[in-house]
Image (cartoon, rainbow, N blue to C red; front, side, top):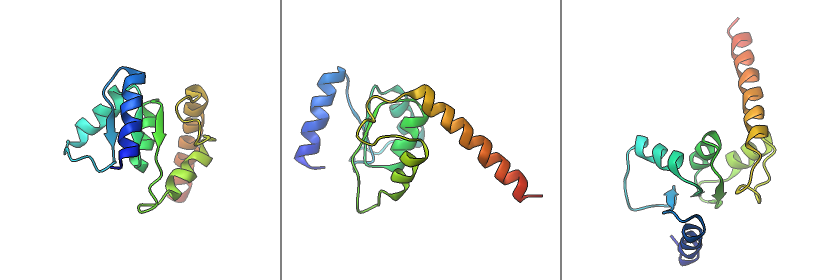
Length: 119
């Protein structure tokens, strides 16, 4: 993890008066999937370069900062942001009611697609 990212995380820890949980940024501490999810669920803000860190931040309605990772690719995150009308520069203050509504709409569309495909 670069010194710039470490400094940014330290600033955010002070701002939120809490320890940052780093999701996907090559943390040297191995945690179980359950603990990883709990860390996101219990956090006040998530800093991640992981698609799954973004997804679970959204599902748990947690503000987050996505640090793009060109090595793993950003296409899935960009697509998710587009589907949910998320401005990637404003992920620390999102309208969760609106986003949750869009997620519900996509669930219905997905369910309908599956049902129609299986007929």
